Image 1: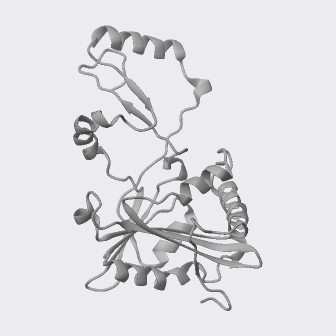
Image 2 (image 1 turned 90 degrees about the horizontal axis):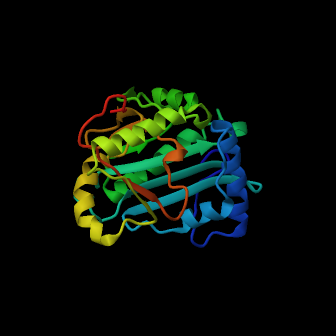
Image 3 (image 1 turned 135 degrees about the horizontal axis):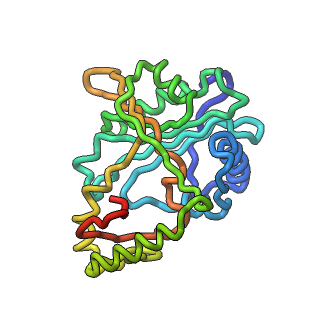
Amino acid sequence: MIGNLSPVAVDTKSASREFWSRYHVYRRLRHAEVRPNDPVKPDELVEIEMKHEDPFEIQHRYEIARDGQILSDFFVATAKPGSPGYESNKQFMWAAASVHPDHRRRAIGRSWIPLILELMDRHGCTTLTVDTHEESGHQFLKWMGADGKSAGAENRLQLARVDWALLRRWVEDGARQSPATKLEVYDGHLPEEMWKDYCPQFAPCSTRCRGISWITGTSSSRRLTLRTGMPDWMNSEGPTTRCLRASRTAPSPGLPT
């Protein structure tokens, strides 16, 4: 509790319009702060995503609010018992938190730490993963005594600068030199009859990329791994996901490898 402020649990499936109104104001403010040049997801799409019950995760969301304004937002998730991969992931808890820019440096961010530890104990988790790609987040993790473990980068393609003639040559060369190779695009879910073939190939590549990671110890039985990096654009942009399958058997001169 910070002064007269305390966290309140949020059930997005039954949340009031008052919650959604202040949440959308808050998320747009944060979006303008960290990704001012990116498009903002429509409110109705965000609500659909947040109301969806993930079959593989246990999720908790909290807010600290005052006078109809969110001051801080907090989310954690951990693998659900019985879900695929539970035994190898049950020790992990993933968390995300942010503080309104007008209310920082008031210990609101660190006020989430006792709740995090309580939730980790409740679910038997021993490793916490946290993402940030902001300098203030890096400094906060350093203040906690965390050490950086890995780093990632985000690359963007400016379509206006693409050499489309060169790209067409790549496409033509690839089809000519590897006629058995094809690119398949599926809008929505991958057809179920393909799962048996696809999943063993996808699984080794499906490890979450979390950018810069941090680790700090709290006791002999609990370890906090605080990571930074995964940006919002890695989230699904809609209720369906576009799936791509591609392979190439041999490199071609001038083709990217």
